[in-house]
Length: 115
Image (cartoon, rainbow, N blue to C red; front, side, top):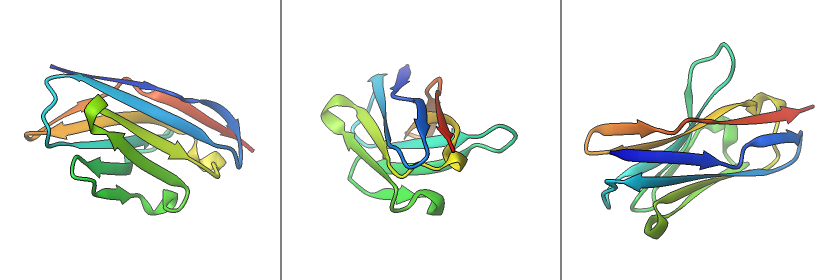
């Protein structure tokens, strides 16, 4: 079993910053992908950023240059630094872990950006 626990969401004004954290526990293998997704009301869940255990990262075009994903493999933790936040970034943000063709989700954390 794998558990993912997110933290760091909240309310921030446009232009502000937030940092999300996700700690994974349980049967975590050394080779995996950890990612952040988000889902706004009435919209489909979308990938925001992903990072492999080897260090490769990938970002949605909408967040490139503003968000940074990084991970601490020793702590099985992934972070999402979000800068220059916009109202359209408002969503529930979910942590995701993929390993051995299985994926796991956190419970989600709300990020609200006011204009």
